[in-house]
Each structure stands twice: as structure tokens, then as C-alpha cells.
Image 1: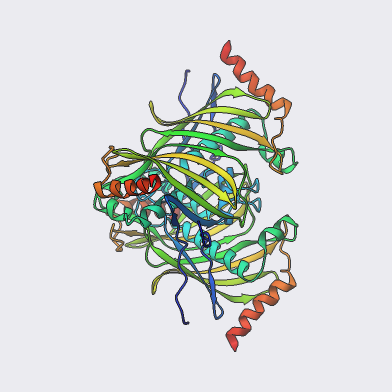
Image 2: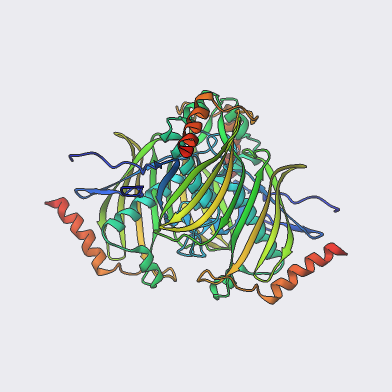
Length: 152
Length: 152
Length: 152
Length: 152
């Protein structure tokens, strides 16, 4: 075989917004014929993790070194239309507010131009003991960089 | 072997509140050592389904006959403390408001006296085509019965 | 409220066989209307964990102390008939062979008298670095006790 | 925004072999720090579905029209080394044998040149009532085409 091998789907920053593609598989659906409601949260976490990866943030290293990990502190989601088997979706993610120990994130699950789900998620940085911790300074700088682009 | 066989955990109505027990298994946790955030929604759905079952509502029959099915239209959840492998949890569920085509439900994930997660969930009754539909009259009557007990 | 609170379903040893009950929820099904094939493995792991718990083995303590953890090294499963939403299942588990660093386990997913799935699972004890390790002596003694009952 | 939007990862046929890429997310891992054993079966199903898609087979249409759906009848998997958070994996899939109502499929989960899991899966075509059915003639022709390439 010649040429590059297959690679996992990468998201992409478009201005200050992160776009992450995925497809719906059998595992995501339920007997009602639609994507099971908890699975949209799995999709949104994949997108957030991909955005951090694109920003050069290594969550696994931070976890293994004991530095800390993000945990969702709050999530509000409106389900507007169901996704179905085989659908191509895009998760659109934007930082809404950057605080010392957490970020407020706006996420939408899109199918083409249609918003299927719309969510606000608060991700808090915590120690392995579960206590809130300030996010690493360099990470906040990267987040602020995104927000500044927005203002420009 | 003598005596009755093992049976799945049943929830129980305690006044107007439904209590549903479950235990945390490996499948529920993630590498951060805690229950993955989307899985609390799985736990809460089990509890809602069990409450309907106790009320004599057969979701599978309603689905197979084309009568309709519940889909979550909106969910807001606050994560207050993480659940961990082996924890015994109780999901506490109460109807907050009964509308024509949906119910607003308050759910808490408890470990002993501690609230681990607190959620408001709007479950909408929909047709197999995904359109809102009035809930069956008998179901609403059962729900109203619960609310009336509360007032008494 | 009077009386004891709700409790998660416990399995039970019946002779040398462990029986573990569970119910099928929406999360377990897929758009084909049946339980998604990977989810039977989730059910079987719940049963194995419950059997260990009944034997007085604390997997979380073993994991947190760095003693080790079970990982499946091999699994063979025959799917004979599908489980569906709302089904009451019993997972029947028996130790087939006890080795120094692993156990060979026979598991069946039953709905009443019908075998829905039949599996052989090899669970290997490993260190946190992923290397095989001898199972704790007391655990093996407990497993041997079960096998001896069988011979009696 | 200019240029094409993000797209989900597509697999690719390389000779008679299908290669499908994916990345490991938090949802895939468990408290032991590795991918939970049932989730490799989710990964392998994504790859099988993608191979069918590349062959021009529309599983959702077949399901909705009542033509039939694949269900796994048998799966044997050897877990050789664990995948971890953030790993880039490739699922390698090859048809081993084409029968009237089923296909025997060889699947490997690779991380670079390392085989993490090795599986044989029998996927049976069934009616919505769960009875075995001959696979559509055109699908078998497509599968045979792959096998003939192999012989050439």
C-alpha cells in the first residue's frame, strides 16, 4: 500500500468556533429509532476533547501527572430534532466565558444547517481528589487567545 | 434450588416520590476514576422507565403499537459530587408538572443522604414520526393521581 | 417512610452458580429493536463483578491500592436470540477453570428458561502497568471453594 | 468560512481490506485506565458499517423498508494489549467467508503496527422478526467482488 493511512476525523477551528464531524452508528441509536438522549453528551465531549487537542492541550498527560482533569459541573441541553442512523453531524463548540477554575461552553449538534441540539456546558477543572483547581495558566492563555480573535 | 429466583431491582413509590436503586459498574466509569457524565442520564432514564412500569404503563407496547414514545426535550443537570465504582445509588424522581404532551420531572442521584446530581427533565410524548402528541388520557390520570396524593 | 429503602439487585449463589438479574432499558437497545450486541458484555461484566462482591472481594480497593485488576483477555460469545426492551434477564455465571493469573468463566444470558447468549470469558489479573499478575491467594481460595462445592 | 466543512472519518479499501480510523475518548475508557472491553465491539461495528457504506450498501434503508438487518451471531475476540485515552486506532476488516445468510469477518484493532485485539465475527442477515434471511443478491455480488480481487 502506498500513500498515507486513514486518520481519525479531526475537528477544525473556524474563527473562534470549533467544528467537529461524526457519523451516527447503531451503538448511538435506541429502539425508538433515534439517537439515545445521553449520547449527544458523548458527542459533545468528543468535540471538547478535540478542541483541547487542537489547542495543544494534552488531557491524558495532565491526568497521569496528577495535574487535574475537566469534569462537567453543569449541563443544559435542548433537544430540537432527533438524529438517526447514518446521519453526518457536526458539533459546533464555542467558549462563552473563561473563569479561573472553569469554562462555560456553548455547543450545538448540527445536521447540515439544522440545529438538532443546543447546550450550555460548564467544565470545571478538578484535582484527582475532586476538588476545584485553577486551570493551568498556559491553557487559560490559549482560551483567551480564542476569545480575543472573536473581538477582533 | 428452592425458593424464588433472583429479580431485577424494582423501584418503589414512597408517597409521590419514586426511588430507584442501582450500583455503579466498570462500564459507568471513565479513566478519571468517576462515573462519566453522560451516564447519569442513563441512570435517570432507567428510573423514569421503572416509575412508568410501576404505574402500569407499558412503554414497549405503546412503541410497538405506534401509539408513541417519550423523548427528552430538555434536560438540565447539576453535578455536585462524583459517583465511583461500586457505589450504591438511589435515583429519586418526582413529577413536577403535567402538561398535555409532556411532563416536567425532577430527578436526583443520591448516595445515602448526599445529592450527587440534580436534574430537571422535560419528557415529551411523540409519534414515531417525531411529532408531539397528547399523552394517553389514562396515563395523565395516573400522573394526576400522584400529584393529588402530594396535595393531600 | 417506613421500612427499608430500595436496594440494587443482588445476585445470588445457587450451588456453585451465580445468578444475577437485570432488566433491559432503552440505553441497551438499538434501532433494530433489539439489545445491541456489545451490551451483553456489559451485562456479563456486571454479573462477574457481583459474584466477586458476594465472595467478599473488593475490586475497587484492589485497584486503588495498586494490587491489580481483572481485564478480559479473551471472550467468545454465541448470540442465539435477541433480548428486547423491558425483558427481565438472568445472567448465569460459573467458574470453569482457575489458573494462577486468570480464570475461565462460563456465562449465559437467560430469559426465563431460554438461553439468549452463551459465552466463555477469560479474565486475567493484571498490574496497573498491564502485566499479568498472580491472583491474590485468598481470592483463589474462594474460587477453589466454589469448585469444591461443585464436586461434593 | 471558505473551503469545505469538516467531514466524519471515512474508512478506505486497501486491496480487499478495509481500514477504519478512530480515536479513543473518555467515554471509551473505564476506571482501570484502559478502554472497556465491550467498547472494542462498538469500534468493530463502526468499521463494518463503514465498509458496507463504501460498498454502496444502505443499512438504514434496508432496515426501514423491512428488507432486513445484520445481527451478530457469533463473536470471538482476543484482547492482546489495551488501548488508552487519546490513542489513534485503525480497525482492519476483511471478509473471511461469504455464506447465503451470513458473512464471517476477521477484524483487528491496531495501534500503529501493534495488534491490540483480534476478532472473528459472524454477521447474520435477519428479518425484523429475527429470522435468518438470504442476503440481497447485489450485496453478495459486492462481497464476492472483494474476494475475487483477493485471488487476483
